[in-house]
Each structure stands twice: as C-alpha cells, then as structure tokens.
Length: 640
Image (tube, rainbow, N blue to C red; front, side, top):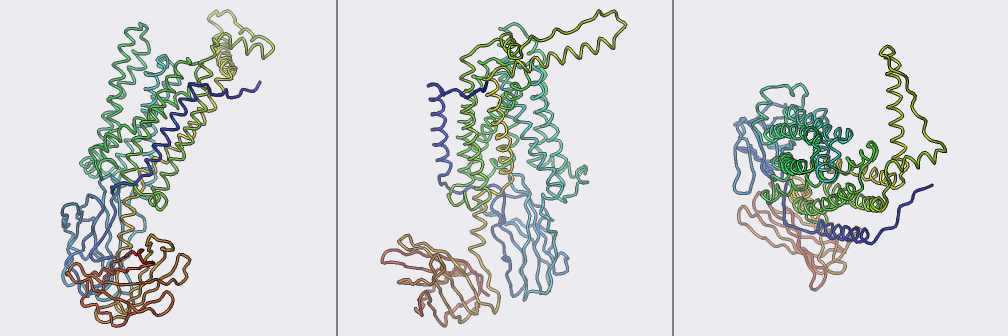
C-alpha cells in the first residue's frame, strides 16, 4: 500500500499561508537599498597609487582601508627591485576621523626603479587580509621584487581553519537545537540514546573545533606554516586579540554547557515526579538559554556584527539570528534522528516542534533582513559581487526549505489525527507479514554455558531492534514524515555551508567600495596617452552608452583631447552636447572647461588642452542626449 501526502487541512493551510506571506514580505525587504556598511577590511587607496610613476622618492608610503585593522611594524613592507626592504619598519598612524590610514617611512637616498608594497593586516571582524602593489620612482625598472602568491589565510592552514569554522557552527547547532528540542518539545527524549548522542556529539564537535581554531590562529593570520600552531609566543599573542578572547570565552562557556548536558541527561532524565521535573525544566531552560546566548555572542563580538554600521544593534541581532538557526536546524536534525532511530515519538511533540520551527524561521528571516541591509543594500550588489550571489543562493535555499517544511506540516497534521499504539502497529506488521513473529528461544541458564547465553542475548537484541524497525516502518504517516524531514535536513546542511562561506566572503558593500575606488583612480605614465572609458545613463530614452576619452600625451602642458561616444552595442552615437572639465581639488584649481568640436558621428576633439601642473586631476565628461536629459561622469587621473 503506497502512502500519499494528505490534503492540507484548513488550519494547516492558514499556517502555510501566513508563513509564505511573511517570507515574501521579508525577502522583499531584504533586497531594499540602504546606507553604506562594511565588514572585511579592504584596501581602498594608497599614496603613491598602484602603478604610479613619481619623479622623486616620497617620504612615506600610506595605505587607506575600508575599516579598522590591526597592524604591526612588519605589516607594511616596501621592497626594492632586488627584494630588500626600503622602509624604516616604523608604522605611522595616519588615521583621522572615519579615515583608516597607516603608513611607513622610506629610507633616504633610495635609487630609482620599481618598488613593491606588500601589506598584511587583520580586519576588525577577525579575518586576515593581504595584498601587494607597485609604484616606480623616476621610471619603471626591468625587474621588481617577487612576493609570495599565496594570500594570508590560505594554503593547508586556511583549509584546516575553514573546516574548524564549519565544525564549530555545526556543533553549536546540534548542541543548542538538540537541547531545545528536549526541553521544549519532547521531555522524554532526555532518556533516549540517539537524542543524547546528538547533543553530546554537538558539544564534542564544538569543543574540538574551538581548540583547533585557537591553535591555528597564529599560522592562519601570520606565516601560514602549520608548525607555528604550537608556538607558545604566538598563542600568547593570539590571546591578547579580540578573536582570541572570543575563543577562550567560548571554551569557558562550553565548560558550563558540559554541566548543563550532564544534568539534562542525568538528574533530569531520571526525575519521575512531574512537579519536580517541571521546575527543573524551567531552571534548565533559563540556564541553557543563557549559555547558548553566550556561545552565540562569541561569534557576534568578534566577527561581522562587531564592525561597520550600528554594531550596538547588530551584535544582539546576530545572537538572535544564530539562536534561531540552531533552534530550527538543530531541532530538525534531532527530529530526524528520532524518526529513524528511536522507537517512537508522541505526535504532540512533533506539533510543538512545528510551531517552534515556524517562529524560528520568522526570527531568522527578520534578523537576516537586517544583516543583509548592512552588507548589501543595492540591487546591483546582489548580482555583481560574490557576496550578493551567495546571498541569493541562500535565499533560494531558504525558500526551498520552507516549501519542504510545508509538506512536513501536512504529515504532522495527519499524525495528529490518527492514534495507533505501538502494540497495534506491531499487530499490523504481523498481519502484513502473514504470520506472527516467532517467540525467542530460551534455555535454562545453569551458569556454565555463558557463551550460549551471550549468543541468545545478542539474538534477542537483534530481534528487538528488527521488531522496532518494523513497527516504525508500518506507520505510513511516520514514513512520509521521515522522508520530508530527511529532505529538510539535507537542504539545511547545504544552507549551513553557504552561510559559513558567506562569513568568509568580502561583503558586497566593501567590494563595491573597492571597485569604485579602483575605477575612480587612474595613473598616467609619462609620455603615454591617458585613456579612460566611462558608462553613462542620462535617464531618458536611448540615454545609455559609453564615453571614451583620450588625452595625448597625458602630461603637464598642451595635450590633444579626443572624446568618443558609443551606444550600448558599441556603435558610434551622436549627442546634442558633449563637454569636458578638469579639476585639481588639492590645489583648488578648476574646473577648467573644455568644449570639444564635433568631428564626425560619435567623435569630438580639442587641441592645446592645457594641464597646468601635476597632480590627481578629476576629469568630468558631461553628455546631453536630449533637451532635458543629461549626466556627468568622472574619473580621477594622476598626471605628472
């Protein structure tokens, strides 16, 4: 007989409708715009700029970051073409207000050539970041210093640290969600072996992963050598950092969690008096909530939520988000284990978990909207950055998970309508088998044939296990629920993996800020023309296109200017008006207007355009495509 999913009852349909409406509303809000925020630190500027050719050696090299970073004397190194350090190894703090800027002074009398700036830092959200760029003094040299291609936090150490991060999240989910399932949904589960193994396994996994992260922190943020994991001086230095303090706090809280687990599966499981058990349930719930919130806070206080916009709000929101994830996915895993490994579970327990899962999803969606608001904020960021694309994948997985959960709710509703004691289920199995189960064979135990007695005991245990399995499989509603919950758990594993990858990915806002900084600054090399390409959109009909500008020879003095306008297909496009202006903000020069002459379709030019002095010039191009539609696009170019 094939079991089919029962039709949705009216209450179930109303619950599903509410859930879908909440999901749609929250996902809509997720994609709304907002003001900037940041997370991973990124290099947003430098002086000299990447690729710059300067006439004389600067006094120092300065780097600007998107957020606060931790640096030391070796974090910024300036290497000459042979790979020797040309800086004084003295870190200079150039921060001012919201500008995060650090530098190093250069030695006097360094020769001309190409110099490599290699930098390494730890961002405020605990992630190591690194990079390198070059600039030249006088003229580029034939060779430049070679820096390691492997970024900080990569290699074998990076892989091991990433595995430990995944394991820590998974352990937290199993520990918190399994314990919550017992206390809030199924108190009898405290005496069930498979449930105990889920919770204890979660604690062991999280503890081992935390210890591994603590040891790997030194090579992860530094040398990348696995042997440095046992460097006591490095470990001491790690303990003085915010991530190190968070990991130590997590270990201390795991000690409290061990006490909680021992009481839950010890005194609590053995307590038979309902009144006393109710009081102990309340006490364990309060204590467990405090410990779980503390464990979640070790992530919130040291990672994304602790930096950027509104950290005072973001950190408690992150704690709620992690607790909701653990309650939902950890409880789901525990229910799956019970359905497959335990003899039976009361239907009321499944219904209670269904309600808790609903509210967990609601909290998860609400807090996720706020977190996404801080890290994304624009439609373009969702499709143009790796963070945004991963977030879309996560949203899709949540939608699939919600749809699968709705099917589970159908089976849950069916379970609540039918009551079949285990004895009746066993009878059904026997009838389907065509014959009753054989009675186990027993022999007198005279104390001599211990081998035979042990064999009979194993047979009885095997028969009992097989009988319990037949009883479980004889219930079509239970079988249907097992399948849908298994599907939910599989999707949840993928969702957890994507979430962990998100925590290690450059947030969309920061990535776009870096891209804008790179796109907005260009260096002119002596005796080479300046070529820039800028997209524009005047907002009117046929108002989109690209403008290309060439300044030849791209140096102080007289230059020839050519402007080309193209449509989105790359074909020449005429416009009623095209204007160019040059501004040197540092010297309060400009804007110096230039009105080029129309030469042919999509081409304008001007001769004798004067660039009076060297500096970081802003070149602005104004394009008008109709009587009322026009726009101005600009780019910074270092000339001279």
